[in-house]
Image 1 (cartoon, rainbow, N blue to C red):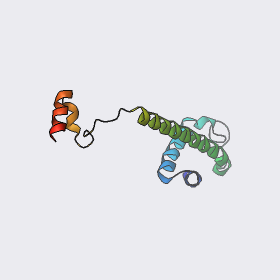
Image 2: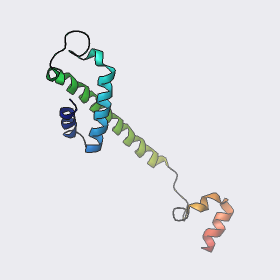
Image 3: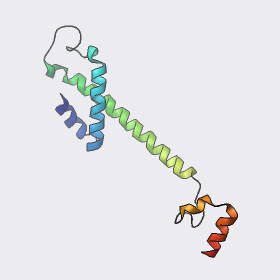
Image 4: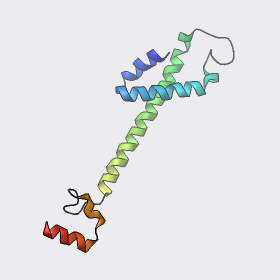
Length: 111
């Protein structure tokens, strides 16, 4: 069952993302094994007949991954806007950050 789901996810996400989403989908399917029609309680059916249910779970996991990516991007943008700007010369010499303000100024004037 993993191959059709993987192909489905590859059409909708990049390769690394599809692998992660497939893993999450399989985890959800494993946790909800009793809810899967034909695999839980009751008569066992053809595995292909439950494939639409699998696609529904994969679609939900894909949606969750997209929402998480959006939240992550918004957080990075917000943090980059709020991050303090480095002092002149600190970007080239991160060790200046360990000096006091007066010592840092002396070193920067000397350099």
